[in-house]
Amino acid sequence: MQKMLLGIDTLSIFIGKVAAWAVVALTALISWEVFSRYALNQPHAWVLDAQIMLYGTLFMLAGAYTLAQNGHVRGDVLYSFFSPRAQAGVDLTLYFIFFLPGIIAMTWAGWTYAQESLAIREQTFSATPLPLYPFKFVIPIAGAALLIQGCAEIIRCLICLREGRWPQRGADVQEVDVAKLKEMVHVKDSDILALDRELQAKEGKA
Image (cartoon, rainbow, N blue to C red; front, side):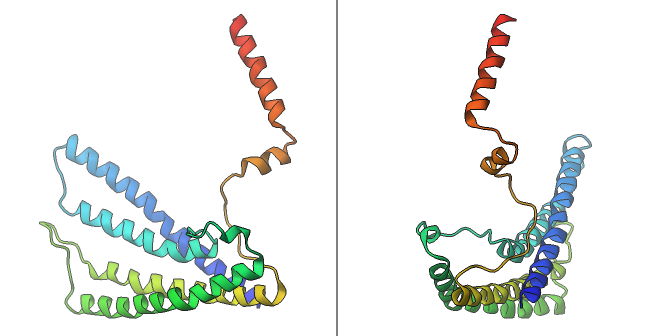
């Protein structure tokens, strides 16, 4: 079971990392358009639509990745004080009441929405139209990825309710924890303050 859960995490992380390349594409596209608009006086009508579609793709496909990393924002400030079993009970309840109905509806409606867009070969409304239907298929793909990851999270909740601790999840790059970093290099706040005073004294003498 744990191997399957980590496999789903790996899939979500892979999708998130592929989607992250949209940031590079966005940066290159916007930089090029700014140069073309202001240096060459040649703006392009389609660039804004392309930016929106790239950002939308990134935003939608990052959902499963964020869920796999347990990175979605929680609105309950008391949650962190709960025992693991209480946390699992709250999560399980919310998954069934809100998550599953919403994501299933999004995936189902998104698939219908994308098929209708493909049938009419939908395009953007601009002087230089872009095909819109490929972007519409991102909706059901993102929904399916979220649904798969959500099922893994539900299984984790059930395991936690049974065992009293959260099972391991797939790890990726995390933000630097300054406190843990200090412990790793055996540095105390007093040492940092002493070094700061020493540097200030040297600057004063100079």
